[in-house]
Image (cartoon, rainbow, N blue to C red):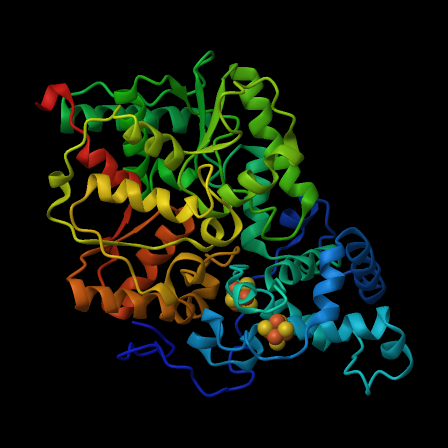
Length: 496
Ligand code: SF4
Ligand code: SF4
């Protein structure tokens, strides 16, 4: 099935011997001018690229204090070396987080430190050559910006931030990544990652209304562009058609219906994903976030709720207010923004949903903590809410829930292998190999508890698992949306 070697699932996760450079050939397609220029980047490698790159690095070092600190303070303790799923899956030493950081650190030292300027060899500084730039392109696109390494670093050095900065520098010299930049362009032009125009979206939603009516006998609505609705739901566009995402969207709609909350989607802001973060571009992240503000104002909603999407929630939770705020026109009773899990959890706690968990008795489930939710956000108003709330929802809607081992869950969770803008077929080898630690943990709960399904709250994780699970002997439909289980457990009068 694969034209590369798929790692073997063993009894437990092993730390492999290093094979330096074995994945240096893995890199995503480079964006051409049509995808670069709409984002404000040169269409191809500029002639004076070295000067432009170093100036850009200087600008970022001035703008982001953390970047300079991260490049300065590593003591080479080695605590992060075996923590990256891409190292564990590929065995390439350059995928050890400290080595990945060093690709930029050596250049930083050369141009921005006294020692590096005068005694480069002594301090391990190197010139920014074309070869180094090519290495950056490969290995900063072999980082899903998952932040697992930062949890284990005694100084909290965040490789994700370094990787974002590297990608921004690459974009600024004209070497951007096609997958991300094409998608950002589509959202700017049409409103969602898929380039799905309003009539197609309206059609899809109508189809979902008919499907739910047939299944449940209930008129659950999927409103689009309805002015005066209470909630604007901003959800990843994969929720409109991909499996198992769409079953999650059906679940949200059923929750709103039973709780009597009026809601709407927006055709102008029909995308929760914000790939501006993956390429480290504040400007592009802001352009996408502003569409949500404009849609909320135009529709006159009182709340903004995000659907199941890990990095979208990270952008929303951490940055939406500074990117596109103030949101003083929304109802102050609710946080801005809210996660759909917070909405559902609150309704469950208040007894506002009628649930029958036995509806999911044919499933034995485990939960995948998506890295962006786990390590870059929170839910609810208490520490650790991002871990507790999805699990509490699961326990309310399903009688058979089993957690993965703690070293592979909560803030130590492993990335699905496809995050950070790497969910593209040109990186399938990396994605399959990077999924190894997560698949190993899944194997454990399958063997120990007879788990049949993996549940996630991230659109990228769901797409990635659908694709890579068969490489490890699992079925592609063993991945489910959390709100599919919620939707299946909801009891409606028409069914009673
Ligand atoms: S952020 Fe994640 S993918 Fe990147 S180096 Fe750290 S552990 Fe690896
Ligand atoms: S754990 Fe932190 S300080 Fe230690 S080598 Fe890794 S990045 Fe450097």
